Amino acid sequence: MIYLNNKIQKKQQTGLSLIELLIAMLIGLFLLTGIATSYISSKKSSNQRDELTILEDNGRLALEIISKSIEHTGYTPINAGILNPPFVTNDAQVVSASCGAENSVKDTSIFSNRITQDGVAGDAITVMFNGDNRVYTDCSGGELPSLCRVPAPGAAAGSSSVMTRIYNAFYLNNGELHCAGSRDSKVQVIADGIENMQFLYGLDTTGDGDVNQYVNATATSVAGGWNSVVSIQVAILVKSKKPVKSKNEKITYTLLDQVVVAPNDRHQRAVFTTTIRIRNTL
Image 1: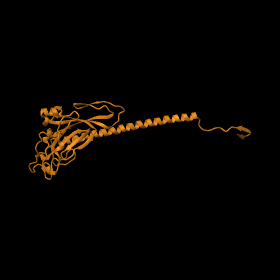
Image 2: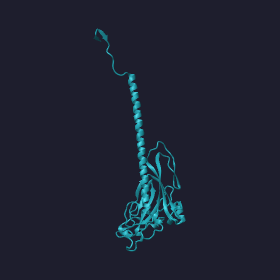
Image 3: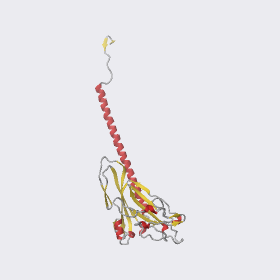
C-alpha cells in the first residue's frame, strides 16, 4: 500500500484481459483471411491473363507463319514453268534436283505422307512455288541456293526445272504445329497447344477470279479443282498450356466445316481463323 495525502490508494492492474485478447486474435484472423483470399484471387486472375496471352500469341504466330508461306503457293517468275497444280496431293510430287554443291530439297523423306488432305484430328497442307531472287525461303526460314533459283528474264534457259521448287508442309502432331520445309532436313515446331487445324479451299469455277464455293480437300480432289483454288480459309483450335478454369467444361467448337468437341477439362481454348488469297494461281 502507498500512503498519499494521508489516503490509502490501491495500485491499479494494467494489460489486456483474456476476453480482449481473444477478440483481438479473432479480428486479426478475419483480416488475414481477407488478405489471403484477395491474394489467391489476384494470383489466379494473373495466371489466367498470362495463359490467355500465351494462347493468343500462339494462335497469331501460327496463322501468321501459315499465311506467309501459303500465300506464295503457285508463285512462278515469267520465264519459269507453271506449277500444275501447286498443291502436293501425292508423295511423288516432291522431287529434288542437284544445283551445284547442293540439292534443291535437302531431305524429301520429311514430306512422306504429308500431302494435302483432310483429317478429323487436323487437316494437312503441302504447297509449292518456284524460287527466284525475290522469293526464295521456305516455312523454316531456309534459303534456296542461288544456283537453284529461277534466273531473271533473258537469262539462261532451263529455269523451269524441278530444282527451282520450294515446298512447304503444315500438319499437327501431338498438339504441335509442324512445318516441313524443303530447305531444312528436320521438321520444325512452329507453335504448341494447337489441338486442331482445318482448311477449306475457295474454287473459282467460272474463271472470273472470284470464289464460287469453299470445299474441303477431299471435295477439291474429286472435282479436280486444285488449279481453280484462289483462296484458302484456315481455322485452328488453340489450348492453354495450363488448366486455368475453376471447373471442368466440355465445349463444342466449330472450325469451318468441322465440329470439334474439346475434352472435359479446365483448359482455356480459342478458335483463330483467317483467309489467304492465292493470287499466283489466277
